[in-house]
Amino acid sequence: MKGMRSWAEIDLSALERNLSLIRKTLPDEIRYVSVVKADAYGHGILPTAARLMQTGVDLFAVANVMEATEIREMASGWPILILGPLLEEEDEALLEYGLTPTLSSLHELKRFSKIARKRQTSIKVHLKVDTGMGRLGVWWEDAEELARRIASSKEIELSGLLTHFADPADTSFTEMQRIRFRKIHHFISLTSKQDLWVHADNSSSLPDLEKDSILNAVRIGLLQFGIKPRSGGLFSHLKVEPVLSFHSKLAIIKRLPSGTSLSYGREYRLSKTSRIGIICAGYGDAIPLHSGNRTSALIRGKAYPIVGRVTMDQTMVDLTNGPQNLAPGEQVTLIGKQLKEEISLSELARNVRTIPWELLCSITKRVPRIYVTNRQ
Ligand SMILES: *Cc1c(COP(=O)(O)O)cnc(C)c1O
View (cartoon, rainbow, N blue to C red):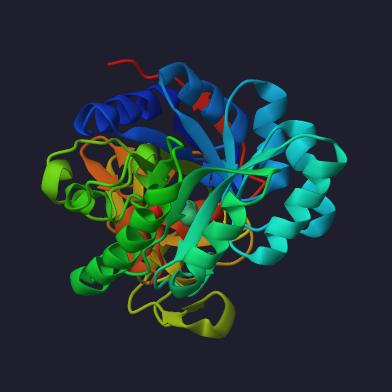
């Protein structure tokens, strides 16, 4: 990419294909909530949301009011659910921008009722139940009481019910969460005649969606960006493609004698005369601090080890085993494919002891996002 030191390439047609594939695999009655918080997992909210709208999303979910207004200013009609709690000073935005909050407490119910009353209108909410996550949501044993309060409120209209799983890999704990959720759902369905959105599964628990017949929607973030946290069930053969790749360039190549230590902390020492390349990106761009001696970089379709501690603006790579004609300016791929080689985001995350979600959120503002459409 000419004129660029480092960049993230975002393939919007891969995003589109992933979404179509997921939707095709889901049973017909299941609605699709597209989670695009944290700047669409680092992919850039506006181009991403625009493409998702064209492909078929039933509802967008974001973390907070600021993210919701970004989507709202782009498209007026789309339903937007805010997954995180609002601060009181943000409540007015619900009416101003027509947003749907998740509600976890009596405190929020009172606040939302107050602003709705003031404007003589009503607010739709999704009630969140804490069935074992220990984070947001009303604790499941207190949920019936809160549901009763919502039912008797004139200003607040229940339009959805959700919970969130703490550890989908732990099937017995997750089943216990599902049982608690079904209990609350049963209680609410006795009194509410509304057609509720009922949702719990995300990318990690999606394979077990079939275990629950009360659900009519899923909340998907990571999977639509082509990263599969776990497969199984309906989804084991799903061929999603990574949407994002990350690239940089070699700035300098130098020969260093055996015994030389590299970078801060002198954590790595050369055991022989070596050719070291300096990549013009560091943790100030998107390369995890702990990549040194744990991951590699692709150049001309071949993997070379990252060596020494990653610094803010530069990263060292050992090119000793590479062809003599490698030269400054050469493209380096740190996430993604080159010819037959690939460094997947999941593999990188495992190697540096983190999770794909965090890696995507660590691609900084310094990295331009380049949008491409690679039709197949
Ligand atoms: C982020 C988030 C999701 C999406 O999770 P993925 O694992 O990225 O699919 C779903 N629900 C809630 C409440 C979330 O915060």
